[in-house]
Amino acid sequence: MRRSHMAHDMGFQPTQEMLETENQNQEDLLSKKARTLKSLTIEIGNEVRDQNKMLNGMDDDFDSSGNLLQASMNRLKAITRMGGYRQMWYLLLFCLFVFFVCWMIIRSR
Image 1 (cartoon, rainbow, N blue to C red):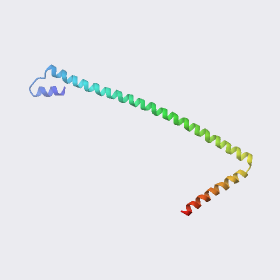
Image 2 (image 1 turned 30 degrees about the horizontal axis):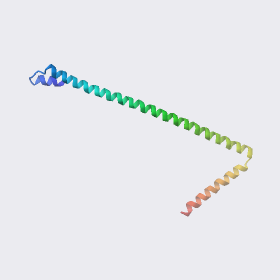
Image 3 (image 1 turned 180 degrees about the vertical axis):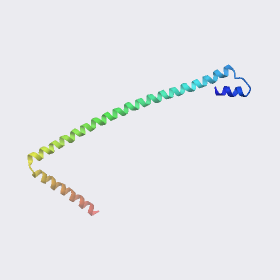
Image 4 (image 1 turned 120 degrees about the vertical axis):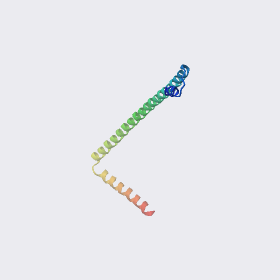
């Protein structure tokens, strides 16, 4: 349409056929852009669904990990309640032994 004004200013009149051809070209271009936008929108929707599935899976994994940690803490509490302080001394000695071995390894380098 802009070209029709330019052609009119240059001294010749565009024909109806030229205008229709230009309009058809513009319509085809707009149709192509609409198809591209539609396919892009569909791809975004698919990606969002995939990401939501992954997030739900991660949520389930975190829940199961939390349950496992809670069960471990409950067992540790039960051990400390029924065994007195003897197990705590064993645990403390074991930790000191591990730190000592780590210190020896680092020192020998």
